[in-house]
Image (cartoon, rainbow, N blue to C red):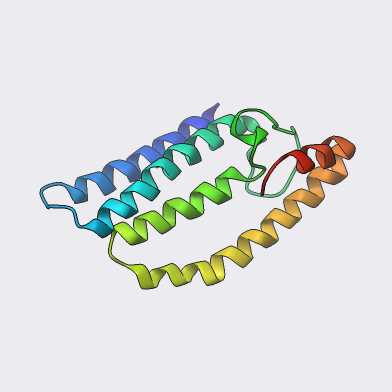
Length: 137
């Protein structure tokens, strides 16, 4: 549970600092679009992280196969919503050229996904293959 609390606290501090920098100025259409992408992605990112619980690790390892909640539909919601959150913040901050970081980020995340999937399949076998057939990304 400590990891969940630390992750949630870090995410809330980041959201607070971002919101604080946005006060007192009229929002542009780009900021509205960016916030419309980043805020739901942030909430779903935090939800996915909390649902993952103790199964979360920085290195690919398989202690538990989480298949409930958001993980019942999406195999890698932390990567998906983390990327959307970054994109939304960059759009909100009027830094669309910085979206080029995804040229590097997406291939790196795909490599991590493949490694995690190999570890999960080696550990959980057919249960993981069945889960993979039923979910997206």
